[in-house]
Length: 65
Image 1 (cartoon, rainbow, N blue to C red):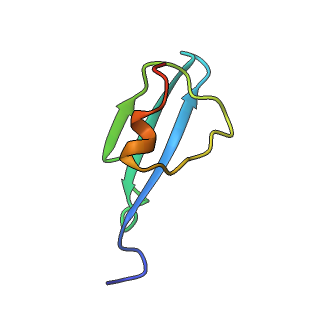
Image 2: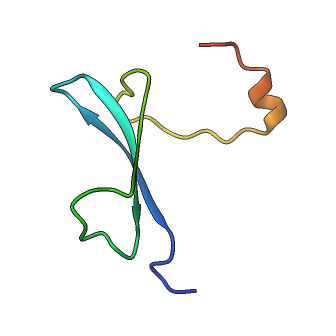
């Protein structure tokens, strides 16, 4: 395994369209112009969002959005 094995993932917000997407890059190829994958979010994700780790059981108990 090398130091740069892995993925860089970031949530990108475009204020022109008021939309967000999760972008994924190969950590070995960060010089590429575009990410390998883009996943459009159904709504804007605010700046400063943080991750939360939950078990499947904890996630199942969360109220629907």
